[in-house]
Image (cartoon, rainbow, N blue to C red):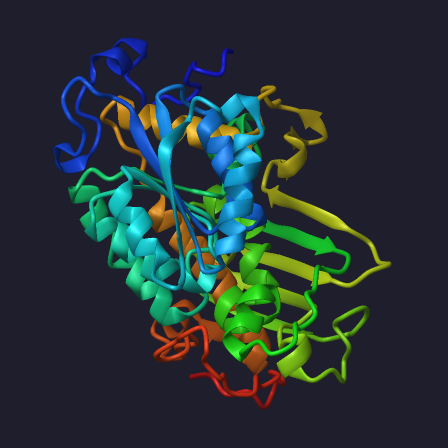
Length: 424
């Protein structure tokens, strides 16, 4: 299969790709000009990778704008692209760099398709702006960190569909042939009725940035975003969302409720007695039991502690067998295989082909639901109480700082204590 061939059944075929001249909602592109102008919001590690995958996925694209809270990150990202001959013809000669907390507005205004790759606490705000501006979107996962954020994202689903906006999310397993074919066999009855499942994102320690002299709380926490709830959502939301997304996809459902336990074991920068204002206030391990419809129970485990058993995987048990989904097996026999195209690139190929075929993919609801699944597990763990999907979705806990500026002093982070932390 060549990189320009589509492996998904939603497209009408290659003839449709050549026939489309007006590519964007509202006729944004001039007739006869099918070059898509791309903008990047968030130029850290994930954004720098996403823009390379994006520009590699289609031959008729131009990078026109980059934005980041910190100008040096945007400049470093652009300079890296300019040094790579693969991208020299895909960077607009007048490419713009914007910085500051409002950089996203300027990037969105400049482009036809925006890549949203900032820390996830900002995602609901940026998604809302992009949908209101009628722009196609590639959004990294997760898409929020709390109930109010998820409600905002879900409110955009119908609007984006009515506007024919394409939205693909960074849940790349949904664009990975091995996963797609394995899940299809499960949906077709390959293991019978699903009874139970388990999923893991268990790994070692994570990166940590020391505080630089004379920087505000806001700047420090954004630069060290993984360790603070309002920007990260905790690692169950930031990373384990991938595995939970596979479970929701396989079950074609979201959980009814969750029961969880977890905490901070310590190790490396995650010192158990460390000052949360310095080392952050996320947990380093979670164990969550999710209850799905029809009595299905799924056991979810994720951690960031060094020197222990690692696994990033998903498995399902059914009335007729067992699937190790991430290995593409049913009853220990291979049932699928991948192509030689990275799923991180394939998701962008699928996005562009759906736009050019006037059949825009829209994954906003599924990624919002998978994000909410992770948030639900975090809430159950932090409080030590069973929490229902309805309770979590209607939660009033808005973690985003009010009137945020880069000079903001932020409240002392409160370390969650299961059994004492209250559900809000």
